[in-house]
Length: 278
Image 1 (cartoon, rainbow, N blue to C red):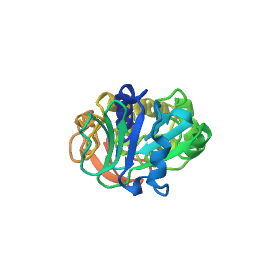
Image 2 (cartoon, rainbow, N blue to C red):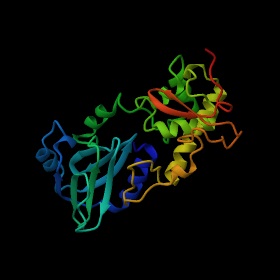
Image 3 (cartoon, rainbow, N blue to C red):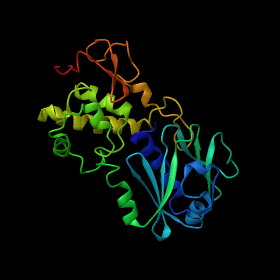
């Protein structure tokens, strides 16, 4: 699933190309993408409006259009959002086609059809939609070690599950949680409320570090992810633990292990990331 670095990569690539452009036509080819809203109503809400801003909240992309209209999209597991030249508007698994006034096309392709789109009218509707659904932005100024400590205080939840909870920390998914926990030397099953101040400070720094590294590498391509140009990311070439079960840890040489945590396959170094006491 595309996580924050993949979605932010797409946002940064699209922003200079589409902000200021006008949406001439939108065709929702798969009604499941926007249900329960009818595809025609979604298209009519955005057509002939200028794109004023391209924003991101967690793993969501938000096209801010004229007259306070917002098109909110989520790539889910296998979605790709591609900007293609005039006339090149056909792709496998194409769900949505947006034609821009300069002839380019914005295509939403999705093999498993889990990706979604919806229209929100007004800033209050946007605020209400994300309130309780998406938490603090880990690359924003509000994400500090003190803020992380406040979120973690008193919680017995394993730190892996805590970081995957989008309503607390937005956009951090399975890959980047494993990499951050390794960097901070924290075991994924340790109750987050038992972490000491120094551990939380290390974890805060690690989350920010691995997210920036992922963006610098234009994301990680494990299966379906492609950036807005159709190219693969390269962060998978820099993984320290994720997907490396049975390989040696680059810091200590111990064998990387895989367990199940928060319902997800989880990779860690048993020597560097000490297991919590039973």
